[in-house]
Image (cartoon, rainbow, N blue to C red):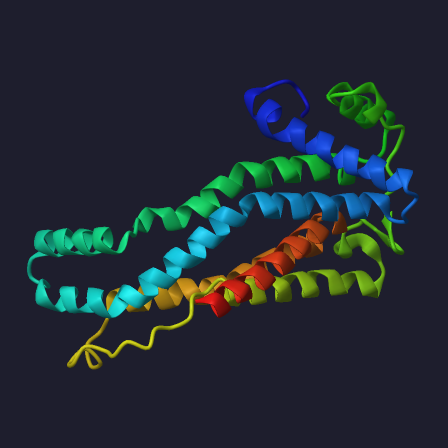
Length: 262
């Protein structure tokens, strides 16, 4: 898993080194639950790195929401001429400084980082604490003083390497519940506020396919995605859920702040 490769060199190794560095710092100051705190610290740093993209996504979503009545008018005016409709839509986007494809940028940029985070955390939490794993980790650390002999997985009475599914303790079952709820509130926080612009006359009684599609996507984001993440939190180690939950908390807080500003 830790063989040299382009992906590992660019993403996995830096994240692994940063995680170990934070772990060492928390051990040095003798804070309890050092590895859990290292995961939280790493999450905050990653979230800060993504903040400009997150802010851009929220602002773009808000602009698209505000433009919907104007897009509805164009759809009605050019419903029989798709080419003209596309040209008018593009012109409107350019006038408002909107790139519709940029909404996907936030998710696309996160994908390699999330994969690297999963591989890094799973190395510590899924592969056990055997000497072979520790040796592999030590080989890719950037400095000799970063080398570790073991990792203490306990975080305030909870084992970060245990999955709620196999824990045998009822309180571990609260982890997927909390994770799913935080994902739900994150989806709400990331949904732009509805516009107050008046609807187009005669549009109320007509079926809006794009609106139906948007509703379906919003429903999936609000309900299906939290259920999926909750299931992952049930089957995967608590340490991974800790990352998801801290990331979600920051998204919720920052999403609400951006809504207030707008």
